[in-house]
Each structure stands twice: as structure tokens, then as C-alpha cells.
Amino acid sequence: MASHPPIDKSSVRFLLLENIHPNAVEVLHENGYRNIVQHPKSLAEDALIEALAEVDFLGIRSQTQVTERVLRNAPRLTAVGCFCIGVNQVDLDTAAELGLPVFNAPFSNTRSVAELVVAETVMLMRGIFPKNAAAHRGTWIKSAAGSYEVRGKTLGIVGYGNIGKQVGILAEHLGMRVIFHDVEAKLPLGNARQVATLDLLLSEADVVTLHVPETDQTRNLFDAPRLASMRAGSHLINASRGTVVDIDALADALQSGHVAGAALDVFPVEPKGNDDRFASPLARFDNVILTPHIGGSTAEAQANIGIEVTDKLVRYCDNGSTLTAVNFPEVTLPEHPGVCRLLHVHRNVPGVLAAINERFSARGINISGQYLQTRGPLGYCVMDIDAAASSVALEELQAVPGTIRCRLLTHG
Ligand code: NAI
Image 1 (cartoon, helix red, strand yellow):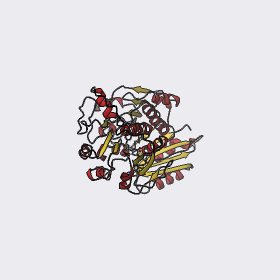
Image 2 (image 1 turned 180 degrees about the vertical axis):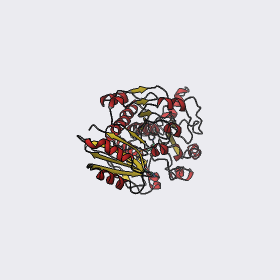
Image 3 (image 1 turned 45 degrees about the horizontal axis):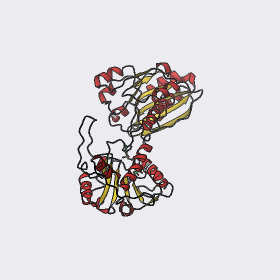
Image 4 (image 1 turned 120 degrees about the vertical axis):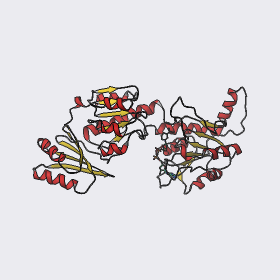
């Protein structure tokens, strides 16, 4: 069981790896945190353990592997911020078991993806890429054949979530008709229209763009029969997850001309890094736009990520809020002026809240605010109490069976 002394901002240490955007340090400074160590690269396991010895908050991007061994050997670690979208580089279950919330930035690059998709829609409808490739090879194809405006054409969005909605709004501004299919009923934005089935969408759309998550239902969602259901001469864009499209089936549909062009940003198997070779059966088609999973990779997205994740770490440190934590009960908390706040992470077993309340009541500690949330095996209880009772309350909390860790926030 871990417990932590009250926050003294000067003693809170941040370790930021992998060249995290300077916005992160700026936000920390603005919030009074100055004890920040930065490193341009990721650290291997042993080096990371050594570097974490005195660290409260760790910031990483996608390269640093935060393994079970790292987490179990980081005695002061309080939370991990992934300054990216993916979080599979962190052992989330062990982090939860140790009471450590992990945060990421799932929406910082939404707009970047949407802009690319809209640009690709125009490029595909105009047949620009084959003409561009030919020009690079010295061939001049000055022709209007197979070249269309997007105005008045139908964009079919599969998955009307954060990105799908933004794509819809931008496409409408270009004069497109927008239809979408989603497994859930969604409030349409603008003049977009939800259609009941995917096949209905495919029968109407000139361009189909995929914005679904990777699930059992979306794996190979676009297989040979589905591709055959698309309108002859329509286009496909996938900037969601590589497993959603059967690449060999798409290659066949392109070969036959049934699909007139495609843009893919994601692939079932992607190179591990820029030194690895990329190979795809789609590489031989000039009418296919291939991009190396950079739909969300822009300066603006990186800057947003720097702010979004740091804000979450600061809110957890200052206030205890865990909204959008990926492995932890989510609690949004009000400010706590003039009172002392206790954060109690416990195993989600019956009787913990009763035990806390009994112990506080026996010691005459008045609880002015109490918030509880659970998620799987974890419970997270936050209590606001009179500052004078803080050390007794902390002692009592530590003695509650099922306690994983507790922390005291004094300022508010
Ligand atoms: P989101 O969770 O906001 O939206 C996903 C939508 O898909 C939801 O409305 C959901 O109900 C719907 N959906 C789920 N299963 C479906 C199915 N079988 N058929 C139809 N609809 C279904 O996700 P968000 O943020 O819009 O991201 C969408 C995808 O884009 C994700 O796969 C994400 O990993 C990917 N992405 C790719 C990036 C890139 O660089 N290319 C960057 C960011 C996200």
C-alpha cells in the first residue's frame, strides 16, 4: 500500500520523455510545477526504472514501454500521461492494480484526420494522383475524363463519431450531400442523414470514408462482398484502423475498376518505424493514395496533445479529477477551497465506503463532500474534510481493508 504526503508543488517531480511538445512544460509552469526533467528519447526498462526513482508523474509518447516491472519499481509514481492516442505501450492492468491512472489525448488530432479525408475526397474525385504519377514519369494526361467536382456528390461516412462528424461538417461546406451509418442512433450535424444499413449507404455514396474503431464487428468489415456492394466507380477512404479493410479484396476491386480509387492511411500490418520497409499489394495502383498513418500527425495536433495531457495530469495532481483516464474510475471534482481533500484508491469490494465512514465517524471527522466511482476491480473515493483533521483522517484511511493507495491534497 502506498500513501503520499500532502502536495507541495515544488517537490512534485515530472519526467517527460520522447521530446514531448514544449506546451507541456509551459502548462506545468503556469500551474506552479517547476521540477521537470526532460529527455529527448525513450528509456529502456532498467534506465527507466532508475530515472523513475524519485518521480511522481511520467509523460511518454508511443515508444517508451511502461512494463509491469517498471510500474512495480516506481515507488513515487502517481500517474502516467501518454502524449499520444494509443496506450498499449503501458501495462494498464498493473497500473490500475497499483492505483495509477493513465491518461492520453484521444481527440487532439480529430480535426487533422478530418481535413486529410476531405482533401483526399477531392483528390480521388478529380483523379489527381494517377495524373500526378504520370507527370512525374514524363507523361502529360490533360483530360477531363473521370474528373468530377465534389459539389453535389454523396459522401458516405461509416462511423459517425468524433472524426466522422467533423468530416461531415467540412464536406457539407464543399457542397457535398452527407449520409452516415453508425451502429448507434446519432444526432446528425448540419444536413447529414443517418441511413439504416451499411449496404444502403454503399448503394448511394460516391465516396465512402471509414471512421470506426477496431472491434470484432469491424474486422474485415470491407471484405470482397462488401466492396462489391459499393457503387461501381466509387471511392474508398480508410483512415481508421488497418484491419477494417481486406487489402487483397480491395486490390481485386481496384484491378477490376469496380472501385475507382482509394486512400489508405492505415494498414493491417504497419512498419514498426521509419527504418522498416513498407510493402502493400496496393502500391502498384497510381489511383491509390498511400500515407504512413499520418492522418492525425500535424503540428497542431502535437501542440494540442501537449496541452490536453498535461492538463489532465495537473488536474489529477491538484484536484483528484480523473475524467477520461483510460484504466481508472472517472471522477470530475469541484474545486475544494478551504478544505482538505483525500483521495482513496481501493479494491472494489463490498464494505469499503462503510468502513471509511465508520472510522471517520468514530474519530469525529466531518465529511463535507464525498465522491465515489468504481471501474472493474478498482474503486476511487474522494473526500473533502476539515483541514485540522487531515493527518488523523489519512491514518484512518490507510487502515481501511482493501486500500491500495491514498493521497492528501491540502490546497484548494
Ligand atoms: P469515435 O469513438 O469517436 O467514433 C467511432 C464511431 O464508430 C462511433 O460513433 C461508433 O458508434 C461507431 N461504430 C462502432 N462500430 C461500428 C460499426 N461496426 N459500424 C458502424 N459504426 C460503428 O472514434 P474517433 O475518434 O472518431 O476515431 C475513429 C477511428 O479513427 C478510430 O479507429 C481511431 O483509431 C482512428 N484514428 C486514426 C488516426 C489516424 O492517424 N489515421 C488518428 C485518430 C484516430
